[in-house]
Image (cartoon, rainbow, N blue to C red; front, side, top):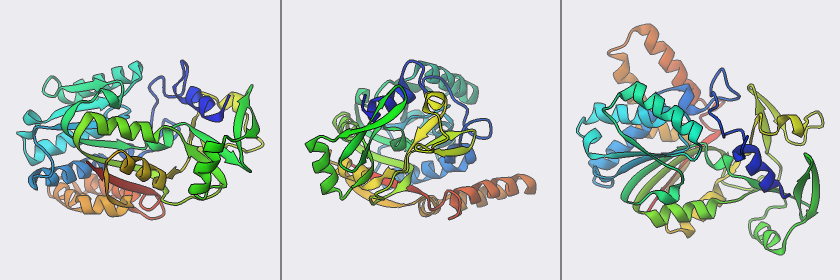
Length: 328
């Protein structure tokens, strides 16, 4: 089978890595910005609130998260919106796009624990199910979880019994690689369909997404496996794919040029692309921290400030992660 089929089964098959709820953070295989600090979600919500104040966003529209894991991010956003203007929790509609039933169950339990019956969040199995006049859509680390093909020397990777072999790439794929100056690396599959589905179902949309990667072709493989906070390159001679398959996370750096190309073709405009650090500061994360400092104990403030440092520091998440904002 082609590597993209293998990776799709690895992550989303009947016993795939994401089929069941996975711990994120110290007890899991990796950290995310969401698991690092609740102020990550608060700052994105603060940005959404500014768009609402400016009349760019619609207070009667939707707030939707794609790939919400346990639901921390959307809940943190709802909490901050309530702090800014309590009436928004009544006018806005909330949704999560998540196709795994076990993960949906964990999300519903967390939402119930967080808000009781005061907040209702609708679940969608796929972005194509969302029909809205306006939606602010947010996602954290989803583009690196799309299956990809691996290209090298005009050949693509195939997998047989967990062993990688190389076969001639199709003329269509070679043409795409030539246009994008790619000689070796990952070619994500599904960006175009994803962007098209979002554009088709949502008349007016702001889509904000965070992920790690660059807006250029590296011409090298970044695909790797995470296991208990250790990283293993896919082609590591000591790595046994049969053992890692469906048990560990597999990911790669996002080519944001490809992401942007897919969304622009679907009818979106790229509003901004910048580092996570710049985006969160622009969204108001420092102001939020200062507001927190006025009502929190010094020890609590110091702990949150340290977590925010992880989000903003160039040597940690600040520069490696990027934010991209599209509007339709």
